[in-house]
Structures are given as structure tokens and as C-alpha cells.
Length: 400
Image (cartoon, rainbow, N blue to C red; front, side, top):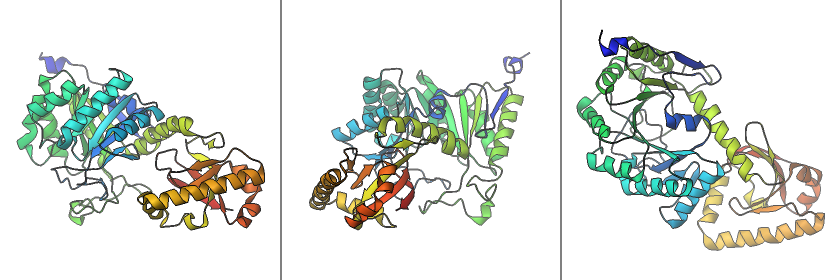
């Protein structure tokens, strides 16, 4: 009996709460992710690849922008400090480095890995996603020496000319895997890739294919010739993606491949991963006046200046002020004066100036009780539910 045929088939483990399933042992990067402990570093939008299913937005793709979760940071000392701050705010236990292709800015990748390991210890887990075009032994050695724990390759299913580069990664002592969207019409190509890579990797992650609102020119998922459609009226997930993932698990088991195969659905990303990360951040950023919901969002009383009342152009107005130092200083000084006036008028100290979004924050009951007096003061009181993220994305605004 051959070694392969003697291997025990792996049990398929399903989670009905988020529709994920896998066989084998969950990759370490994923273990940190599902608990909400993974810092997502979008390290650049630059990428030599043009995948037709790429969901990266036109605001990020092909632009050298950096985000630590939702926090846009700069490639400088202050940006490094903000990266560490975001990791602290979510009590991060690991980081996933993505893009674009991180290998376009390999020195930045190395700096961030070292920065995180120096601050949180060598046990802080780091993994990186990359297509194949920039993979060389020299580049992989750089990121390995910097401390990368896990690398995830994103091969082109329709072009096997670069698949051999996966083998280069076996020269280094780290975890190696593949991560691709599960394309319903690419069963044959997916199996061919796994057949090739099985001896070089320990896991393959199959992401549920999703439609995206991106407007980048190469995005072509909606092309009628592909015949992709959503699996139901309330989902962006593509019909047949999950079904192919189950077929791939069956295929690997029947072949006795010693691989973990993990299907990561959109629901897991939206509910489990994001939800757990929000809860971790909320408990660290919530003010004494905030209420944290079961979902990890914040409910707060907010007082706006009339000229900065949220509407469809609110984010643009805030950005315009931030980009103009003189305007920003004027608005902040005005808010400071308003803050003092409100504190004196209502004999209340638990009111805070939010210099990021140019507003005052307090509790829900205060603005509700004093809405008429605040309006007489030419202020706009509201009850707001928003994410505890760096961008404080509003989910609901109830003007009183």
C-alpha cells in the first residue's frame, strides 16, 4: 500500500452559524481571523495582476495607499505609530498583509512585520497574500527573514506558467498555502492546480466568490458570458461557489491529499470576523457616554454644527476641512467654544470634542432630553449608531 493511499481521510467540519466548512486543521492565520484578532493591513493598492474578480475599490486599486483596518495611514513614523495603535485597539494577536500585491512594496512589508514583532513579541502571527508575478527566492527570503509566519499564494488558474514558483517557498520554514476565490466554472483548473501544488503546501483556502461594487476597469464578474448570478436576492455570493468548495474537499479526500481545505464564505467575513473585531475595538474606544450594542456598534448622542449636518456630501465636507489646515483650525476652535457653552448651560461635563469628524459626543439621553434647547442654540442634536472603527462609519442617524 502506498503512503498516499494509507492516509486517513479527513472529517469535514461545518459551522451552520456562518456557513463555513473545512477538512483538516484550520490555518493559523484563519484562527486569529475568526476570533477578530487579526489586524488587516492593506499595504498598497499597487499590483501587476488584473484579476477579473478583484473586489478592490477604485479608490484603492493601483494607488499606493495604506490602511490598518479602516484607518488610512501614511508611510512614515506617524503612520507606523498608528499601525501599532490600531493593533492595540483591537487587541490584535496577528496580522494579515494584503493589497494589491504586497511584494510591490517588499521593504515596507518587512518593516511592518519587524515593527509588529518588536512591539507584541515573536508569537504575534503574520501572514501575507500574494499573486505569483513578483515571487522570487530573493523576495521570499527578505520577508521570511523579517519574520513572516505564513504565506498564501494566489495563482492564476488559467495560466500555469508561474505555478512552479510556489516550490521556492519550501526553502523556508513557514506555513505555505493557496488562497483563491472558488470560481464555479473553474472546477477542472482548480483541481489541476491542487494536483500540482499538493506537495508544496499544507492548506488551500477557497473564498466564496462575491459580486462587488468596484468600478475598476478590469473587474468583469458581471460579464454575461460567465453566467454568474447571486445565490439569492439578499446575498452578493455567487451561486455554485460553495457547492464547488464541497466538491474540492471531496476530491482532496478521495485523492488522500494531506491538505486542509477551508471554505470561507461572505457571511463569515461579515458576521464572525468583522463582528468579533468590532467588539474588541468597541471596548477599547467607547467613551463613558457610549452604549456598546451586542453587535459591537456604538450608540451615542451627537451634537453637530449646522454647516456639518450629515448628508450625502458629509464625508466629502469633512475631508475638505481636514485637508485645509486653516479651515480645520477654525472649525475646531468653534467647536471648543460651543463645548464650553453647552457645559456651562447644562452643567454637564460628560461631553467630548471629536476632532476627527468635527462634532461633539455625549450620551443618548442628554441630547434627547435637551433637544429643543440645543436647537435654540443653533445646534443639531442626533442619536447615532456607528461602527467603533477609525472612520466611525454611521449606520443610522436619528435627528431629533
